[in-house]
Length: 124
Image (cartoon, rainbow, N blue to C red; front, side):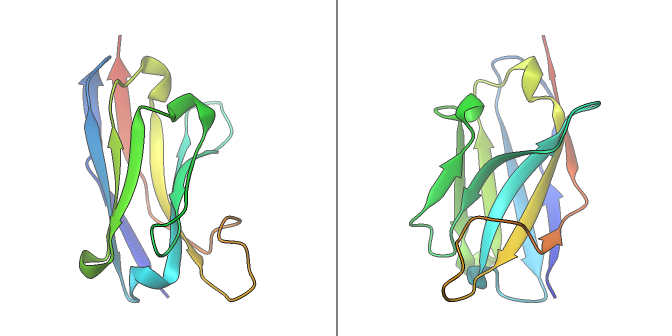
C-alpha cells in the first residue's frame, strides 16, 4: 500500500504559476510510476503528465507541453508538477496517482493508488 497526499493547489490568475507536490508514504515512491491527472466539472478525467520510476521517461498531454514539468525526488518520496503559463482551461481537481513497477509491464497504464486531489483554479 502507498498513501498519496497532494498539496500546492489554489487560485491563480491566468499566466501565473503553481507547483503541485505529491508526497508518498507507506512504500518508497521509487518503485512506482507517478502520474498527475485532472478532472474539471462535467468533464472526464484526463491524464496530464507522468514520470517513470527512474525519471528517465516522461509523458505530457499535448495541451500542457511546454508549460508543465513533472519531476521527482525519490529521496524525499515526492513528485512535483510545475505549472507555468496557466490558463483558465487548466482549472480542475488535480490528482496524484501511482502505478506499481513490474518487470515486463509498461510504465504507463492504469494506476493502482490515488490521492484525494487538490483544487487548481485559474481566473481569467
